[in-house]
Image (cartoon, rainbow over all chains, first blue to last red; front, top):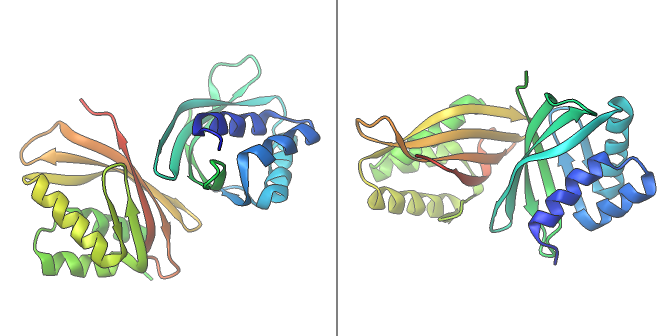
Length: 120
Length: 120
């Protein structure tokens, strides 16, 4: 059982981890076997699908870094948190959003939905 | 198929509808058969459970009115929106929150999760 704060910090770390082996290790710790991710622009089913999605995002937007900006706020088996995407050395976010997720019995994320916030 | 903006406005109207027959009619239009609701303080399973939950909330907090304060923002089969609870004639909210939901194939809400925002 991993506490939700650790899981959410690991989730953010996953988006920043560009070494495939290390990223997959984070994904195994962070997501349930049957996990999925869906936001307006991308989707991933299962750990392999999520890994491929994150790798594609990193390739498309190099030099950007995800940060947790609010939360996690959780109750029962539900959690939400806010994030922003910043350029290395930059202060203004280039993207931001809120993620909602359900949490499996062992504390890992099951279904993650991302929404985008306006920036700039 | 009901559009998501109508569904979300009906959802807010449900919280304000104190006539049981009218409230249940709104619930039938708004929620899928297998819908559920969960926030930090209350839960309802199925349309009857949601109706009982809303009736209990109305009895506990008379004279308060729900308003949509942001959204709906939706993509795929997911939606989020923000609400506030105001006293009749009041301007400062006494409570506020964000709801996240999945949407059934016919456009009605399936699983709704509420989170509370700080107010005051």
